[in-house]
Length: 243
Image 1 (cartoon, rainbow, N blue to C red):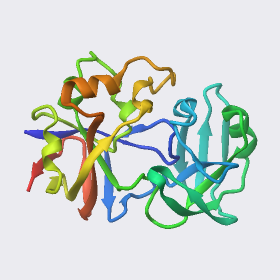
Image 2: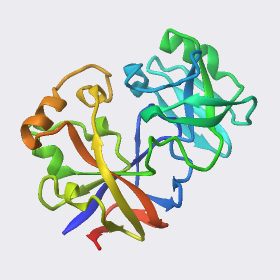
Image 3: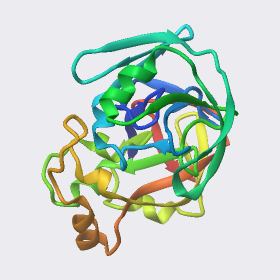
């Protein structure tokens, strides 16, 4: 039996992922997940691939107040009312509509990233995901890389499962899968980048995950991307079933 073992999300794209016990998977993904992001002066989103230390910062959103805590302990809090609307260069060669979020973050974030940074918010309900609203990875697939115990947050997946064979999720591409109270359609496997080679706490490279993927399965991909077919509640411990 395959079950949900971890659920991860963050209100700000590329910042540290936080574990939660449950979330509501809506038509556009998890409400609020990666709704905000950091915007460079080049008009593109700043992601972990461009600035690996971003993964050391944490973010929380409560009652319309966003708090970002930087690795040195600096904490910046403010409301999330939006300002200027613009089109932003995104991951996977996408462009999205977004709003700049004025507030106290710019100075602290720019100093942290060592370049001018603004906080922005995705304009519609899609959330700040890259191409697909759901991502899932199996713990047996991570273990099969033969890297020993590694922090699975480096893969930045919404859902992590326990049980089943290594890489079983690859065989779900093109199929529907029930995850707790929701149903997702599995669209494709997740092509991976150098972010996965870095420890999610330090941002430092510690293992060659890409080479391990190629050696274990013949391709530098791990986990799957999907779209929501039926919205619903997903909780740690829920069953995952191929339909």
